[in-house]
Image (cartoon, rainbow, N blue to C red; front, side, top):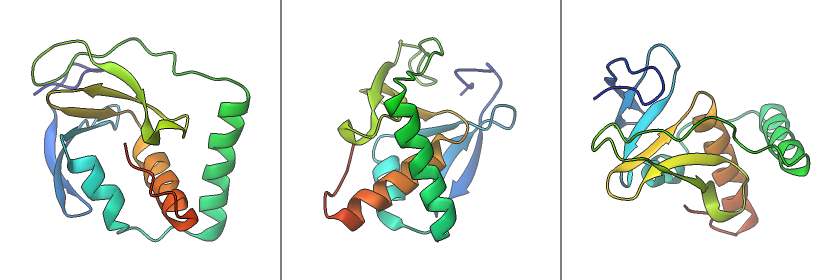
Length: 130
């Protein structure tokens, strides 16, 4: 499979114990259906309180400023169909690219944003899931 951004081959690697496909150039991740939910449920990475607050603040600021993801629609690495833009958790403001049949693409740094947001929502008792 090739990266939907760089068009270079993705490489399999383990992330939080899950095999994912990563781009060594743009640092994006392809996650097959169900893998994002498994990663966010694991809470395998311990975020420092300060780091977590900085990330949540950055997400809130981007949402308040109405900054939408400006990159063009990506093609699914599995079927080459155009992926749809979806908001992780329905309200986070973190826009991901999703192929309903195959999985989700996370651009550089989105994995961290998604993990911190999911952990924050779980702590609040909202049980945020995509």
